[in-house]
Amino acid sequence: DPSVVKAVEVTRGADGISAGSGAIGGQIKVVTKNAWDYTAGNAGAGVLVRAGMGDVDSMRRGGITAYYATEDLGIALHANRRTFGDVEVNPRDDEDSLRGQTEILKNDGKNDDLRLKLNLETPIGRFDSDTFYTNSKIAELPFGNNTNWIDQPLNESETGKRLSQSLAYHLDSHSPWINLQAQVYYQDYQRVR
Image (tube, rainbow, N blue to C red; front, side, top):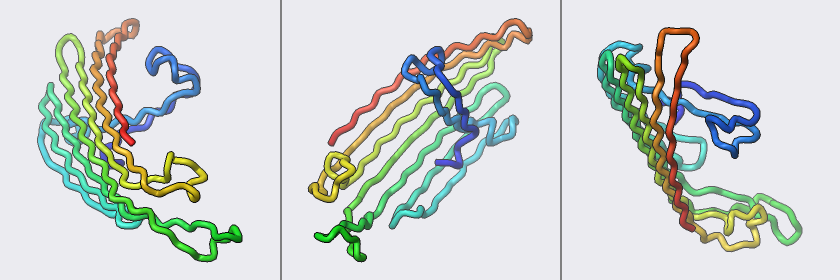
């Protein structure tokens, strides 16, 4: 959900230390808001509710963000749901012409995601925890996700679940010579077709 994005960081080139050895071309990191971003760094609490329609037929989205912040502790919970409608495609006829024909891919797809961010300021540094879970289902895909899908049966579905957890520690030594940051990251992804 774009409303929970704080920043987008783009790193060009290989960055094996922070992104792993597979990031040879660079990385794009989306940073989401924490509780202090909603309270402008002050103590406070609140709930934001959002809803809308997308540009795809019958695509709907909604979400809720709850946050609580003190001087030393920030907690933010983001929950979102998107549902998708049917998709109209134009298959080619025997003469390789579209001629306004329309075929419908039935799509009762949905995507649910949940993110919990915890931030704690202590005299020895800052601890950050970011837990993200998403569960998505696409009801009908072009078979095998093949680019030449017109000749394939239109009956494949896909379900995916992703869980990621990151823990970070930032030492603020108030010295220009010392800057320590440590991060541990775990991710699990399961896809069923």
